[in-house]
Image (tube, rainbow, N blue to C red; front, top):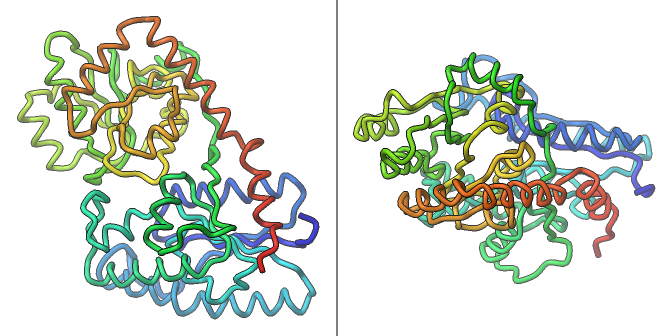
Amino acid sequence: MDVFMKIVFIGNYLKDRQESMKRYTDMLYREFTGLGLNCSIWNPPLFFGSLYHTTNSGFGKWLGYIDKYILFPIIISMQRFILFLRGSRVCYHITDHSNAMYIYFLPIRDTVVTCHDVLAIRGAMGFEDAYCPASPTGVLLQKLILKSISKASKVVCVSNFTLLQLRELAGFPKREHWVVIHNPFNASFSPMNSSEASYRLSSLGIDSEYIFHLGSSLDRKNRALLVRMANILGDSWNGKIVFAGFPIDSTLQSIIDECELNDRVVSVVKPNHESLLALYSSCACFIFPSFSEGFGWPIIEAQSCGAPVLASCIEPMPEVGGEGALYADPNSPQEFSEKFHYLKNETVKSNIVSAGFKNVRRFSSNEIIPKYLEIYSQSVE
């Protein structure tokens, strides 16, 4: 790594509030500065986007595009020139593949792109199993993103599943410096002691056994499965269903109404970290029934907190969860309910939890960070 004098992480436009990507970038910065390396984070400037209340839709979105795709490339070029004058050898890391187009303004052989998933790209190309439909503008943007990633000499994919899909889309059966480096944890996760967890859960209105889901309201997250699963379980299980992350939307609410489970559903909108630890640590089961993912951070977070995990059998969930989870068809609430019954056997539950603790060792920073150092240092012909 001594061939580089500096690492520059190319981050996201902060007003877009892509929280998981910000945590990922901050984690890399924290880990590498902790090793004594000279690091910086470059984010697109908030200039035109500051004139409107949001950059996620409408007029504000186009103002954000000016900041991201016109101003920022100019700033990148200027900052690169300054570093060149200083004689610095720099490694650049575009930490979110949705920003891959910045590679046109960076030295390709010294730039790494992390590809977290190809869901939006596949959705724009008409693959329904991605569960990511795109607008006409989105189709054009995703085509540009794929073209930009394909230009990269060094690509890090967060799962083997994502790498295989990317190779297929890009038309490259194999690229020497396109590798898999699983996501490390971007925060600290461990079991919370029962008394503190009970106190925190009580403040959230949770006072009985519950199954737990963390995620957004996107269709691919398949939150409705937990409701249908509880409905199938009937009188054999009368616990609560806890949805954390995004609020319950109208579609999910209609299913809750249909199943007459309103009094058993709890919504925890954007829990803080301590509340999240309590939710993971005390749940009867963490349910992750997604139809599509690039990695699936909540699986390993739950395992680290000692939660039994029941996840979708669709990749990359089995790749990430390993032997520390049970898997079922995300199209089958019946199969999920049957697998949930397995956990009533204390031996089965204990074995799953123990295997989960073992599995998460693969994702510690001590295991992951050296792999980044290796790809940063690799020479590309």
